[in-house]
Amino acid sequence: MNAPRIKTLILLPVIAVVTAACIPTPEELETPPVKVQTPKGVVTCQLYRQNRVTWDRAIDFPATKMSVPEADAYCRQEGQRRLK
Image 1 (cartoon, rainbow, N blue to C red):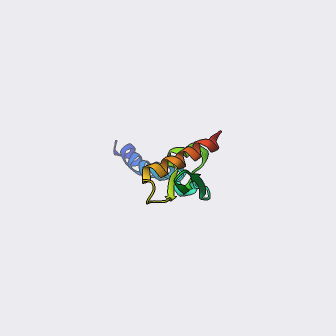
Image 2 (image 1 turned 90 degrees about the vertical axis):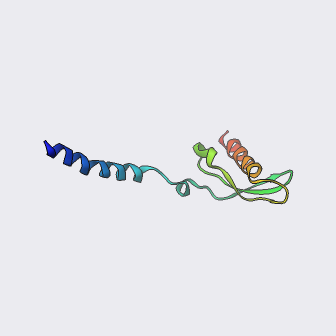
Image 3 (image 1 turned 30 degrees about the vertical axis):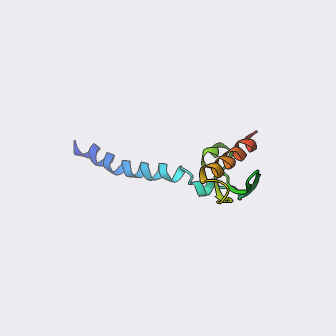
């Protein structure tokens, strides 16, 4: 009766490791940085593959003219534009 439990205890970590190895990290999905011209200046965006627009973010922007959320929004807009 203990044999099935031991097999289960051994197999669960193996399954978890194999599953985790199949999930890509954000770094594996990155595209080269993209520069986007905005009314407040140039924003450099880190975009991800097309199905990951929600991860798109600003990596450089005119900090004296816009906030991080605003710069990130420009990057998400650029990612959406490239989806079309």
